[in-house]
Image (tube, rainbow over all chains, first blue to last red; front, side, top):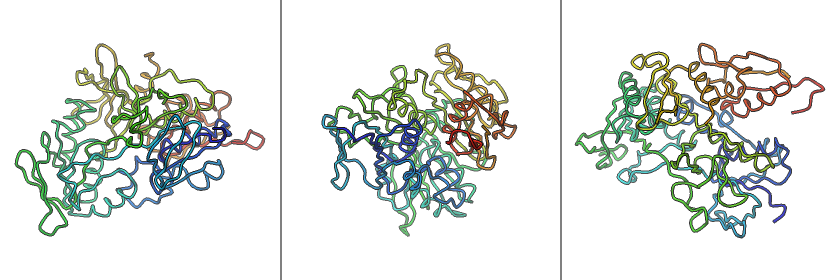
Length: 389
Length: 70
């Protein structure tokens, strides 16, 4: 179909960055962004950080606005999620019935928070993924508010951190033995647990939600944990990870409940069809690589734009760096820490909550992690980058 | 071409250093400082990459009159 150009399904970081990178490389064909949300593309990392701390205007987190779109000739449709795709016909169906043809497609529909069935009916149980949810959460986090966070991943811990700063009483419930254990492993997770506990977060690890009910007033909740502990909450944040928005691909060649199979350049099994960001699922050594963060998503968007404009695939590993800000601590990780990884402190000390650690797995460096050591971290990250795979 | 950084919006994520380590560095507080404020040739490309990779939009190139428009 000539003239249909590039269509980007999704309206977040990948959509904004792919579209602007395409124009930056002189791409002259039509570009159309199909955003599921009724909002111009904006940046998500601040939602669990700055946005909870203070009043933040929409333009401060904007990635692409109406003026940019007009200047760059990018056609943006808001509030119209894609509901199905036909790859043989190179056609998408949008919510509302519109059909959109594409020559090349970038799948960037992102992910949404996982839910917990026992908490689904509670009016005070929130999730945090979009700007609306961030505003709703901030409004409710007042001095004295009893917040219970389910899940000690980076979103849960950043919200705990912001809530503590706002004077809330904060309890975090985590199923595994340490916070961020799946990412950091047991040893570093324990250091992080001590950091949160020392600052006044009540951290309950190794427990899950058994049942929950609305409080007598109906506004709050009573939560019973697997070990019998009962928690009274005014607000509950469910932060137990995300699931990719892939339902619209069901029945297609790219259907996969875990994310769209692709390589680090976003290439799927279908010619001219790419995936990037939270919805993408590239494999590294047979395991899903972690690309659900700002930097890898941004990097994949650049690679896709490069390929769409006749450039070459990037042979390097994806830059899977991510950061998190928790209770004044800057956490930074590049690479992935295997459960059996050997942790070697390169600078500072674990017990001081200020250190750079390198992680080796099967005899080779697999990651660097830093807490409150941005300068040491960037040097180590540069070294990793320069080490041939 | 002049390089500008905004210390007020920088959050020290360090992506610029990775993109152009001979132009950007982090100071003791972990925020961006310039090693060079005037670049040309290949280093313009590296700075453009740093601009693309910056999560807080804190870097800009200022081309003088007569330079190719952005």
